Length: 466
Image 1 (cartoon, rainbow, N blue to C red):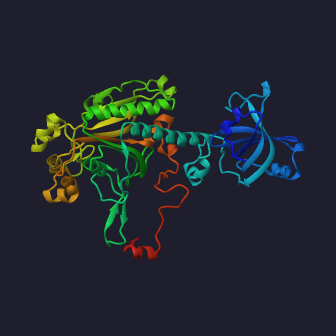
Image 2: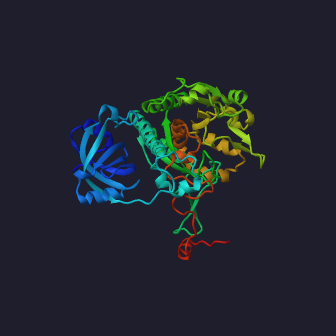
Image 3: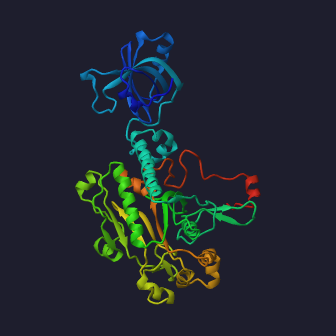
C-alpha cells in the first residue's frame, strides 16, 4: 500500500490509509484499548488499537510499543464525535482505527523528553544526541522553516534571471580578516589549501566571466572562537550582480527578503526598510547592529529590518597601527571619495559603498559595490601597506582578470542562520542548524576533531608536535 502522510488524513475520512512514523505518546486504556499519537514529518495523528478486533500477533506487538518506536499502521480514517475533537491538533477531528501494525524498529528510552522543549537541557547532552533533539517540535519547525526560506529566496532569484553556480571549497587563503582553516596537499608536499571564508573572489570572477547575475547557497568557514551567533561554519545566500549601483542591489534584496518572510507568514515592521548612515547609528544606538522593535513587536514575532550605509572604508589596526579595511578590501569607495582613494589622501574620511542589512539586533547580511578596475584594488592594498610585490602575490589573479574587462558589479551575502534565528525568535545559532558545533569547537554526534593515524600523517607529509 502507498504510504499516506499524516497531514493528508483529514481529507480521507472513510478510506483506508497506511501511515509510517514514530510513537509520540501512548495511552493504554485497560486491556482492550490503546491510543497512540503517531508522528511523521507532516504532523501528528491519533491512531487507535482496539485489541479484540486484532490478531494475537498484532496484540503482542501493541503490548511492547513505547515512545519513539518506529512503526507503520494500516487502518481506516474515522471522524471523531463532537466531544472527542481535539481543537489543538490539525488532525484533531479524525482518528485512524488500526487493522494492521508493523514495527520497523524499537527504541531505547531517550535521554531527554522528545515531546518537550529541550532548550533547558544541557548543551553537551543535546548535541551528543542531536538526532533525537532534532525530532522535537521546535527544532523540526526551525529546520523546515530554514528550508522553506532558502527555497523562497532561490525561487525569487531564478525569476530575476540569476544563475546558480557553485564555487570551490578548496582554494587559496584570502584576506577576509579571519583565520583560515587549511587543508594539507598530499600531491604538493608542504603546501596547503584554504577553505573559503566566503566566495568573494570567485563571484567577482564570475562577473568578469559574463554571468552578470549569480547566486549560490554557499558554505563558509572561519577559524574563529565560537559564540552564540557565530560558529566555525555558516551558510550564506551569496549574490552578485553586474551593471548595478548600490541602490539596485538594495532594492533587489529588500524585495527578496520581504517576499521570503511574508510567504512564510511573518510580519515585516516597515516597508521600505528604514535607512541609516553608519554615523547616524553610532550616534543613536552606539553600534551598527540595533533593534527597532517595540515590546509588542517582540511579543508578536515582528521583523524589523533596516539598512546601514556609508561605512568608513578603513580603520587603524589596534595592534600594528596600520590601516586595514572595515569590511573587505574588494569594496569600491563612494564616487566622491574615489580621487582621494587613488591618491591615498584623507584616508580616515573615505567612505565605502558597503551596506549592511540589520534585523532585530543582528547583522543579517552585508555587501558592497566592488572594485572592478585594477587601479582601485591596487590603491586599497597600497593604503594597507602592501608593496606591489605583496599585492601581486595576494590578489594578482584578480588584477589580471580585471584587465580583461570586468563590468561594474556588486552584491551581498545573507547569513542563513542569522536570518532564521530572527524568524524563529532564537538567540543561539545552534537552534537553527542541524548539526552545530559545541561551544568548545567540537562536532555534534561525531567525535571531531580527532587525531590522524601515522600512515595518514606520512601521506600528507606532516608531523605533529605535542
